[in-house]
Length: 333
Image (cartoon, rainbow, N blue to C red; front, top):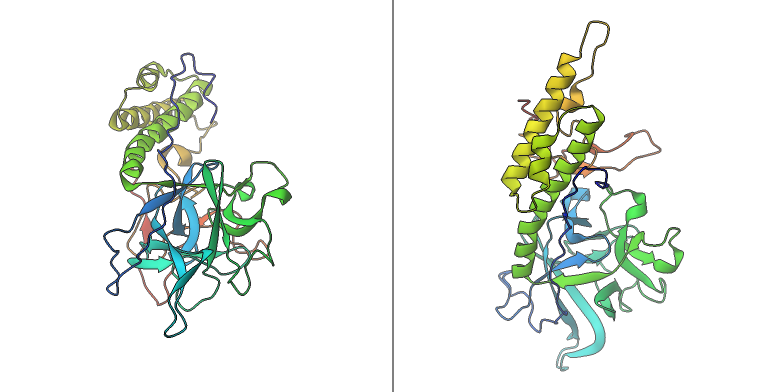
């Protein structure tokens, strides 16, 4: 986002969460699905991409990245399969547990294919993980005990986000090889761990920053149209402005832009006002501003294509395994 052309540029700096070293939990989930009291819960933050490990996309449970994260913890894999043998740890193999909001329960992360991982392990394989620390971050990769996705078959390949595919494609890739990225910095495989209190503090800051970012973009748009932005800039250039103040200034500037365009319309000079009146009308990045009554289990943004015939860009998918009815709608003020 380039805002340097503003006449007075506020020093809005994107916040980053406080991170901590990973500690391994000795106990895992109890039989009733709750987490033992001494379990150390984290959120996983992608250092390079500035987003969190979460779920979404396919059925709402594909390992993905987003602004909101999933709670996770890491435990050792203890070899207790042989009856009468003392459980032992091989010194390198872990389980990665996550609380799936879509399933409302703790599950494990597993690799499904070279391009997909999921957060809701059932009877699938490839759920063993190994972890290595690189500077102040960690890299996660399929463990040697996995039948398919292991370091022998996929050496130096890590769980990460390939941002070269576009920021609307938020699914994680389980086997990214940094040595093979065409553009340096597009394979984001370095993860950091954030404690819940630090995660909450970060979320309180990031919503303000994103509101400022949105207002700054709109100010640039208004300037290009020759519309006064004095009032909006006063709010934007005050780094103590609250989220509510920034959003109110954004709403008012949108009204000012709409009014200016309306006043320039003539029968010979019509204007397409869709973008002015309908925020996020094309589902380009997310489904912000839209509501649904469908009761679908997945109401996320989809980007999948089949030979280019199913979509020409991003689209909003409402999906359920059984028939359902309802509507997806927006109230236009």
